[in-house]
Image (cartoon, rainbow, N blue to C red; front, side, top):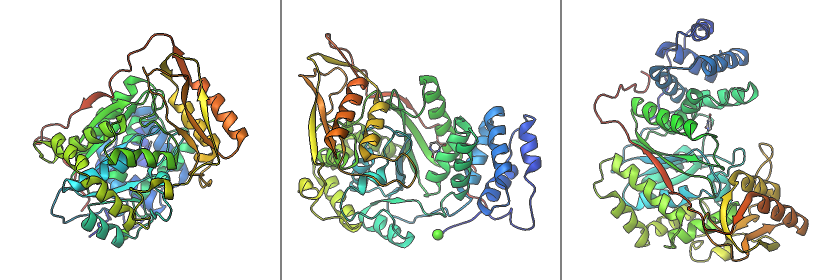
Length: 452
Ligand code: URA
Ligand code: CA
């Protein structure tokens, strides 16, 4: 059921020659990648060696082959799931944004189309929200399923959204913390291996990447975003998972809300058929991943799954299976928590010309809806809703702030006002999907399968 690449097992393997080779600009091969990844997982690579490795990669860079070798070795540093299901096993990964609740819509849409979605998600990182934090706004929702329960739910309902166990890509868990301490986070090579090692360990047939671009995105320039998207697509395909990427607009929140419980309400509205950018992007990404597994009319299929109410039904079953109330879809206001203070954010008449989306994310954290330090408690009630989108008239208001206290609301209103630029003339908001990086043709990809 699971496999562990084990050949770094006997005796002590010395990682220093691998690091030295990288330092001299001579790259990383599959054996070297395994020494590092296994050593990160079993403790035989020290923190000092891991930091030196990360810095050598950051400064010297990896070839396409080196990137793939590192990704595959990190994937194989722990459990790798294998599935035997009557449909394709697929997933989406986003590089993180504000008001991005796509997972809650996309997973049930895909399950309603006969695909299987074993979604292993994360918590908020930096100014961006996390899928698990959002789902936990639903009373009783449990993200910590056992592997057996996770497998059963994916088989029976078609989707499950869960937290990672310690056995999933343990090399990345350790390397990510060390990169953070050693100023080695911004490396396309390391980011690629980090993101993909975790996703590919879920045993997917196909993956669509949503790479965010704009003021709320994790990467700054449009060029860096392109580089990362191309690297993710090339590396995932070379490692044996059909993958493509969309580059999508993060110059504004995707949904009209930011904050955990408020975003769940937006996802429920989309599942119930309300038109929105959230709905459009969710359907585009779902269609894209179905196209990767050979579906010929993917957009028609995912749209029908949503409009028929079938996807909403799957969502309700998933919530109930994971401990939440069975009727959250029909009675969201009865189950989702409400903040004690709700106030409008007044602005002059005009049009929304520019939004600092990261600043909105920071405002939600300041309201208590995100973490300053890992392990901080989250208030699922707070955040922003009814947010005006780029190009829209303000009609005198940007949206609503949901806060614990009047003082918190004052602070958030000031922060939102500073994050919005309003003009007298309407502006063009630009496209929701800015680019599409296709998967390479099926033949010819250099596959590196799970370690023997
Ligand atoms: N997200 C990850 O999982 N890893 C990175 O390196 C950056 C973002
Ligand atoms: Ca296991």
